[in-house]
Length: 301
Image (cartoon, rainbow, N blue to C red):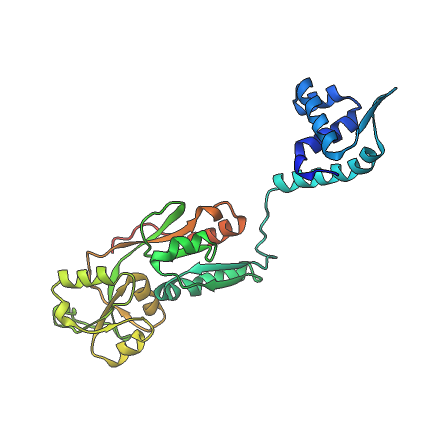
């Protein structure tokens, strides 16, 4: 009975080499084996296949019927394995049907998703994108298990096997309702303020407000950003928000950036991925798109 557990690729490579050269010693030299090692390996293969495999003839080592039958198939499969192991993986954005998953917070969706979707779908119309919910304490596991290919935001410190790129420094800006810029400077100490306290930067922004002596000015704390544009138009209050979000609201005509400097509260916004996707051509492409869109030099405020 043939014992497949005793057969490995080295033995099969030797079988093909002896078949092609007609010589055990020459086959061994071709594979970098000593004469004793070659003879031993051929003996193990004969035992495993329960066949002589080769017999001496006038032209050298001649294949048995079994060897003559199996060598063409083995040669073909060995070539296929070598090709699989050495062929560089290819990712073509124009034709791929791949699904990429990101881990973004609610704020991250509002800041990153629209420009990212627009760029990705323009370059790779067959790609599908998804955003997965992942609490910060579970983010490493989410990336490690390939539940998400990349995460972006104000993320936790480094972890084992986590790679990162610094995209930009987040600052805080004061915004008001859209409309004509006020002719007089706004006195923030007299203004009512809205904060979004359910976001990842909540503790930091609360500290910024406290440092400016504005804690008592906060009249409304929200858990999410969705209602903020409407509230700015109906409530006599200003809001302190992450700069990227404030600038996007202003560009869309939903808010007005006030020329007020908040010197503290700059945070690093990172792109993070696991080492198991570091060499993945598709993930490399996606991370390149994200860098092109969002990575920038540090701002002064």
